[in-house]
Length: 322
Image (cartoon, rainbow, N blue to C red; front, top):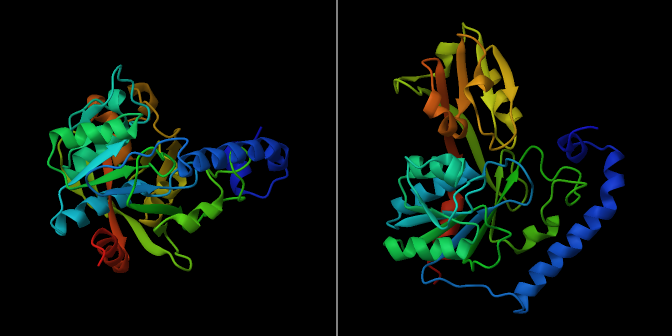
């Protein structure tokens, strides 16, 4: 049986077999959204503005780099942002959970620890986004909240919705789960405030370019440009939504890479990475889970994000309407 990614992003008739399930899924999604609109389900408003950053498709679109950019942008504007998320993959026995740079990713999830480490912002995670937001505001003097991957979590009221789109793969075959990659019908984009495309932007979208940065050694903290790994064999791992994008960036940097793709949010064990003594490159998200057993040949590849300046202009306008 082909992997779902193959079904979702190629024109294979296998997707037709799943269309009845997709129709049922879409009906449930639309009914749920309607329930919030007419008040059958309650939307909770907070005392500070809420910016939701999410996507319509399953898998990596570049949402995390945009959240990092957004926190830094808001800080530069004088705001004190806080972050909330579900804590996907976290195995904590009680919620909400405050997240710091030193939190255990097995308890709170890998992406929250990465965000806390990179941004320095206060962060709280919980399956109940409203509970997470209230816990964060109770303990921190934040004046704006960013909800990471919260587009479909309508219980949390929002002032700005930002949808991130994969500029290369877009919406695949255009079908909802399970026949396609969509969590909601594509027409949902007509309702969001801002659309950011990771890569080539379409009409009415803001472009974002995510490029590889320096590599940082997980043991020593040494920093090296990727070019220094060109004349040696390199293993690369990626347990993210779209591993091919990371591997392609390494190849584009001129590296001779043997790639190893893992499922998104994979819980690494030392034996998973027993490739020998050569250099091992990984994403920053992977590094969060590998630091506890890191070896001297483990390197995390950072990212540099370039965002259309017009996006910041629009965010300022939405936060401070005249």
